[in-house]
Image: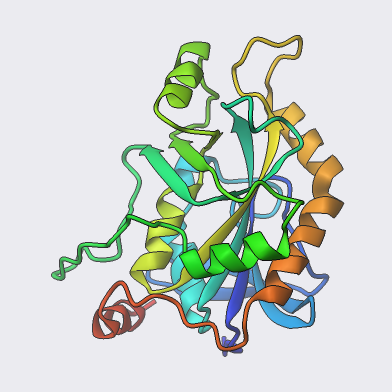
Length: 263
């Protein structure tokens, strides 16, 4: 297909599977085909990709992260705004909170997590994994609406945490827990795409509670909050400067070589 260029993409997490009524376009990548829709959000041209696929067909550890990010990069995207359903492992991040994550702790394994595995070794700077400039834009746009910072621990999934693990994550400095932001975020950084994440706390993870944590509960809570989440997305997208330039974390020639690979 002939892809129209756009500088902003939205990746929808659990419960957010569509933004536009348009039919998806298939983008062929070296890692597989990806369905992407395009439309207008907050007056900006935006590409949309559902992280788990329409209907939540891909488990967290089986998502084709490289295909998703390569497809987005092929459209000329420089900024990704993503959503995620998360559990709160800190009492300061209760259910119902919106959070702008700024750090992650990776507890996944076995996921394809780099584009530089074919004759080029590139070491990615990850001290600030999410783009600080985009994060500041989002924090200002959602002042008084979202918690402006938080560390997310990314677990392998698809199972939820044990109570002991949840307490361990909290003691390690995590505030929220998720299954999908790694390797999505560093893969985007490897192609010099800036990321900002809007997380919605659906539950208190494995903390003692009257309710039993389940995927049905997570999806129901996220669906109930969807108007808030989309409104927050619109605020972030509208606030991204037209001249936003992402960090150059990898040499442009190396990025071009990855995007030049045959689909």
